[in-house]
Length: 458
Image (cartoon, rainbow, N blue to C red; front, top):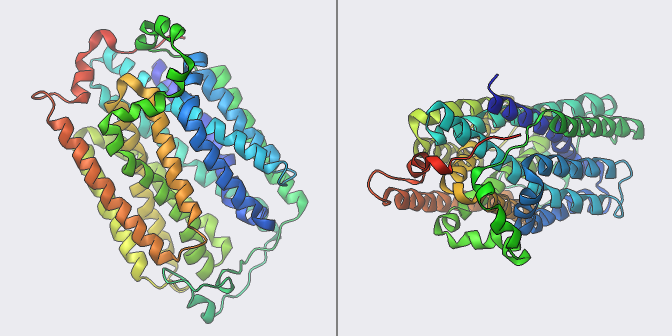
């Protein structure tokens, strides 16, 4: 097997194991730790810490430790969060949420940097187009990674369903479901009894073990990788001031293309936050019961995973503009339909159609936006991907922030407005790239910069 592909698979399966645990825990926080809103508070603190982390940690850690050890160390932060859930309190869960948030940005930035360097390295050796290989690598990664939603939901459902008891949802409660949800908690009474401590500890034990396996996989099988660019700048970095590194993420905002991509990056957080927080609550749980949430999210994850591979492959034939247009039309149609649809338990198939379409769109947002960052900002990948995590986290924080104060139809209108703004600013980025020297874009310039192409080294 080609070495770069092996490394891509190692990272992909490492993230699969890690986020099988974290994804399952995140979706259960509001249920397992509902007392005094501890679970929701921990998620808010987590994403706030992730924003702070995005501002300065990724460039520092990647330069000091390299991509491999940054990934391994950051994964340990996720394990700490799993351990904090064994005895969930304000004194254990909040600190471990901060730890996870601080490790989140370096983890994702190092992953994106690694895949971009590996893609460029293989493209140079094979005589292929760099952006196509990068897109394929991201497609393989998200194919495997997005399936973590399947396994995380399946594990929690199989373990916690042993103590579940279903209740009948009345017509009065059904009338309060959907976009124009009633300002009342009566429609959201769940059909899940509180699981026993032994079941919770079993679940947390499985999740913790999954995280430990992820760290071991990275440490043992992932090759260290460095770029020629990083080697050339080694002496400069030695004399660079701390503040220069600290402000690298903000300095990257001097690139107007990065500023124009902020709405698109934030939309990724908005749309994921809506599906996980609002669709599951005001549509699925309200009309069907909480025991259907896992199955609905498995549908989303399965479609997302398959489409990630598909779009990673076909992007070299269709181009990213077509895929972004497809995601926009699909997401906009779903938003409008959700505004008009009145969910009822007799329409079971419809509850799965929406997450399937959402998964298709999200696959494009994830693979193509990550790939776009790698192509446009090859010279500053660490700072660029740190900005990606920063602004996506802002989208999550805002979505979680107004989740309990705004009605669903208002959130849908906000989502639609951000989607439209994202496509307008993205269109400007493509226009600016087209205006570069005749027949040249960031992607083609990258391919012609032979001496600067990054190489793989253990």
